[in-house]
Length: 124
Image 1 (cartoon, rainbow, N blue to C red):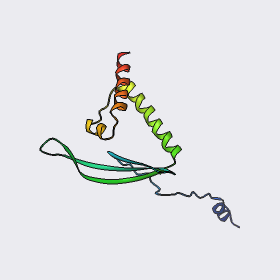
Image 2 (cartoon, rainbow, N blue to C red; image 1 turned 120 degrees about the vertical axis):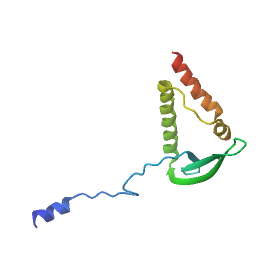
Image 3 (cartoon, rainbow, N blue to C red; image 1 turned 90 degrees about the vertical axis):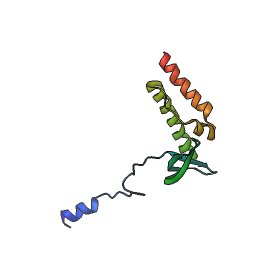
Image 4 (tube, helix red, strand yellow; image 1 turned 45 degrees about the vertical axis):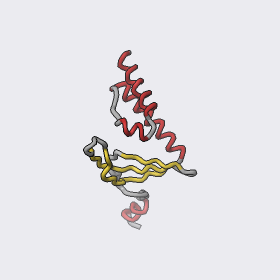
């Protein structure tokens, strides 16, 4: 057996599941579905349009990725995101979320708590 054959046999191979490159995408809409066994995030881009009455209307929604994860992974990711966003507002101040979105998703109280955290950080 030649040295070349011996070396080829000892090379390790890597098994890649899914695409070899990680796509870099921007999303501005998320749909969350919680099932008995897992959580699914549907990440999309929405193109808004404002009508004559000043109301925002979504004219196109383009799904870009579907992520499925266990309940444990979803819970961990959600709380890590909340922790990091809380740190962000303490260090850099508020960020804006449209009022109609807060109302539609019933998130106004949670957003207010985040804003209070930012206000407390700026007064200390």
